Length: 357
Image 1 (cartoon, rainbow, N blue to C red):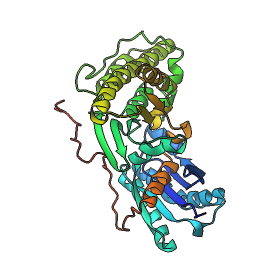
Image 2: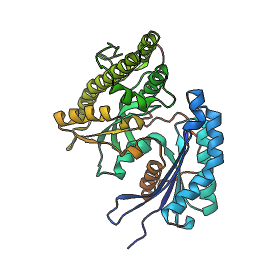
Image 3: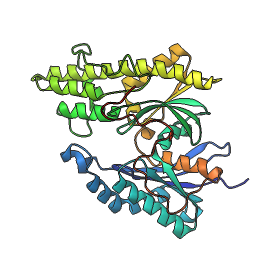
Image 4: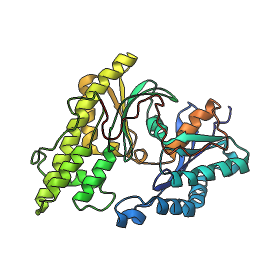
């Protein structure tokens, strides 16, 4: 039996320092041997958001220990590693540089191939770790920095169907939480507060709800929450606003996903209709429930990564590295950091004032 590849993945695109080792079982399915994540929530909490310089400093302090812990936890030895995969973008350039430089140095010292990974591709492929997932499939990527619908045709082959024209969904959750007085990162707490509130108390706007195909917009919704939050003086009002915000997001995603289904089917005519929802916001239970129900109605199979793989992690980076290793798609050691690195390089940039849909 031939030796299965052993790939080390390194992630430092924002405020998580992470390392993971992945291999395959005899049937060719990915197996996580270790997945170590160090969060920086306590560092950034007092600032209400991620401070790039502090994040980078923390990465520098921790990355050697995190990588060694991932190797030790895996039960394998460092000289057994076949390739090193590091996130090269998109993300905060000062943070990306730490993991990318460390990965290159390690690859050089071990004389092993180096693989630069697109962070978004990690999210796109992450469900492959837990499920049987074949190309093509429709992807909704919803995180703190990105919100887009993509036709995932194959490894490295993506067609964007829709994107946010302003804020990412995770950003909208976090900013709404901040307006409600919830500490950073408050996005996940919105769902908890919403359970105590009336989802129909506030009629919030749904930007570009009836135009723009499956493109998304959340800035106007966030502004509406800001105006209402200034007049809130009761705890129950806070719960009601959280519930109304959660409901509005669900309604937006429901309608836009229906449009994305139609676009995906026109482009692909798939034998099997599969819808993958990935990224940090995919951990939101209400959003999961809403989209799972839609998939049942439209004869789609819905697939979510496990909650541990929804947020930023190195297992998904190692997985992309594994896929590329098998195809011998290696990168040179002078590969740059790419703070803006779209999966669909041919897609039109749709952000900022005056965007025409």
